[in-house]
Amino acid sequence: MKISKKYRGIVFSCLAAVFISVPIAFFMVIINYGFRAGFFMAFLKSSLVGTAISVPLANILIPVADKIVNKIVEE
Image 1 (tube, helix red, strand yellow):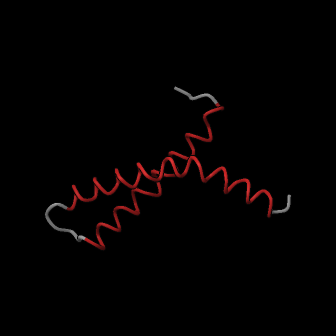
Image 2: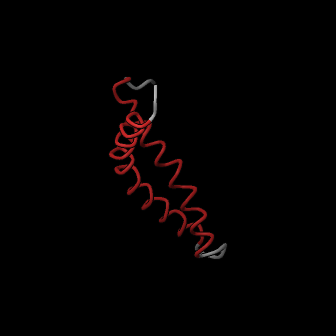
């Protein structure tokens, strides 16, 4: 199954947000909680919250960053 090209930006932003927020959540839980009982649930909760925050932000801020980069970088 393929998704229409018009949704490319949204799909890219969502995947980028997930690929960034989940590993960050993993390491932050290790740093702040450590590997002990309840680690998996803390990691899962942190990943879900991080993804819920980062997906909308990525969909708003990645296009803004792209416009800024296009203005300051020569073609």
